[in-house]
Amino acid sequence: MLAPLLAARLPAAAGLPSSESGYYFLEGGLPPAGAGVPAAAPAALTTPAPFDVNAIRRDFPVLQETVHGRPLIWLDSAATTQKPQAVIDRLAYFYQHENSNIHRAAHALAAKATDAYEAAREKVRRFLSVPSVDEIVFVRGATEAINLVAQSWGRKNIAADDEIIITWLEHHANIVPWQQLCTETGARLRVVPVDDRGQLRLDAYESLLGPKTKLVAFSHVSNALGTITPARQIIEMARRYDARVLVDGAQAVSHLPTDVKALDCDWYVLSGHKLFAPTGIGVLFGKADVLEAMPPWQGGGNMIRDVTFEKTEYQPPPARFEAGTGSIADAVGLGAAIDYVERIGLENIGRYEQELLGHATRALARIPGLRLIGLAPERAAVLSFVLDGIRSEDVGAALDREGIAVRAGHHCAQPILRRFGLESTVRASLAFYNTFAEIDALAAALLRIRSGTPLVT
Ligand code: PMP
Image (cartoon, rainbow, N blue to C red; front, side):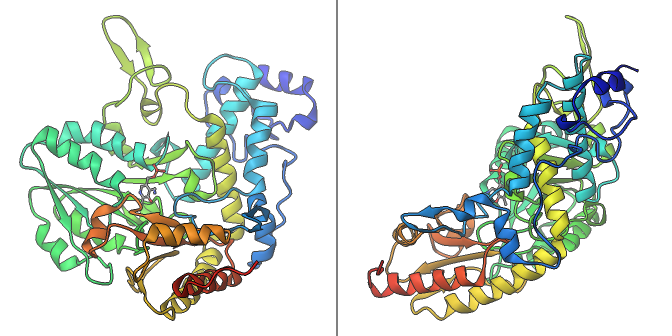
């Protein structure tokens, strides 16, 4: 066997996979659990259990930054999350010790890189409670995952007069690809409305469902309002009409434990960068039989079994949907982010964030002239609001001067803001590294902005 021989010649400090069972591509099998993880973990994880926010904060170097001379308060995690040192170190480790293209070339670094990449796929599988790694496709992000389904499954299965149901809560990434598909095929987009608190109206959903419904696509958690949708119920209702279901989990997976098997959706999508991992990597889960029946959407290297000028035979999933060189190191980084999150525990994270959200909701509700948009009882980590008489963009800029990073704008979800008569809101979004003191600082800053009192430095 080549791999152990090569391994024996390389220094232990290179952090070789601990398994003796050989490398993925040389053996042709799946990597052993833990393969691709450096033997000596590059970063010491300092976070102890139970939940200790101060220890957690020490894991995120950027949280020690100052902005405009003030400590950074990062309340923009719905746009992107910050990265723990363990993820940063894992990326550096990959480029220092493992960098190679994957699945090809019988040499040691190709084997290491492949092991690391495939180990990350296994971590995603476990994280989402998915039966098989073959159901996990690496993509650039949630946007690419949805476009993949729209273009591959959609073009094959959607025809004139078919109906696609989405909701008013959707991010543009879960609207535009379906709209494009409808324009192309003559299918019709139907939209589930929300009530004044930002909850989906299931009665209206029920009345939209019918024999023409071919697909239901909806967010697990809304990025603009934080509404947690009753995903299980929505899927069950779609199943009565044999509709396929895609769940956009971009805003859910860092806040709620996600069991895709229990949800029983056909596709589940996420973006690594909203889960403490690098940008440029995301996941499309697809049920084995659904992926198997989907044609490729991009052609090129890696996704083929055999090519002649006459015809091409494709790989089975997931390789069929991973044409070209992917974000290898970023996938490995996603694996490290999942390890990190799992060590803290999503139950612990969820519990803490709910306390933080409750505190923030109460604190903001006390500010005169502040209107919270979206107050669904089931919410995750998002506070969307407007301040009477002050443009959201000006509120965002004023908060930035105090070192507080929030979003001001339409949050790539124009329809839901317009549902509330708005073109923009201020959005403060939380993660488990935020503190009660940061929320109090936000509320105090908003009070100052509201009363026109300058910040005393
Ligand atoms: N869906 C939701 C709910 C989102 O919040 C986002 C990102 N804001 C996306 C999809 C798109 O994610 P990405 O830009 O990472 O592809």
